[in-house]
Amino acid sequence: MAIPDSPARPTHATGSPATADGAPSPPTGTTATGAAKVTAETAPYVTRPTRSTIFLRTFVPWQLWRFVRINAKMIRIIRGSRS
Image 1 (cartoon, rainbow, N blue to C red):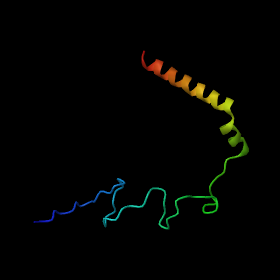
Image 2: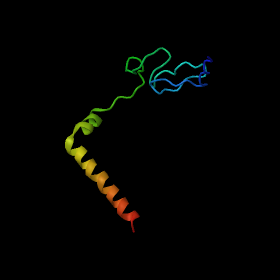
Image 3: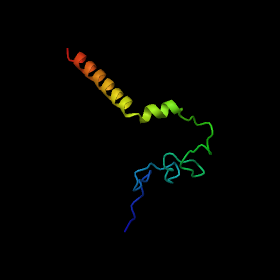
Image 4: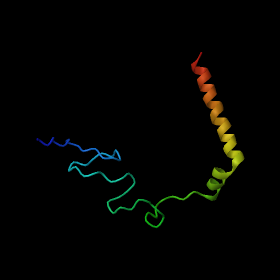
């Protein structure tokens, strides 16, 4: 009984593509050393948000205003495309 040939690029259960030598590629976001997270200690050049930026990201009335403004803009664009 003959054993069937394996495919040129094996598929893995995770669905990740294989490298040229057939080994699975590393997960996205990892480096050769295996560090999965970039922190301020590993990459001190990462910018940090200012206090005002953090405030606007967490201030609910500002977020509601942005939501209404973006939706109004979308409605205006959609209505304009129907004429």
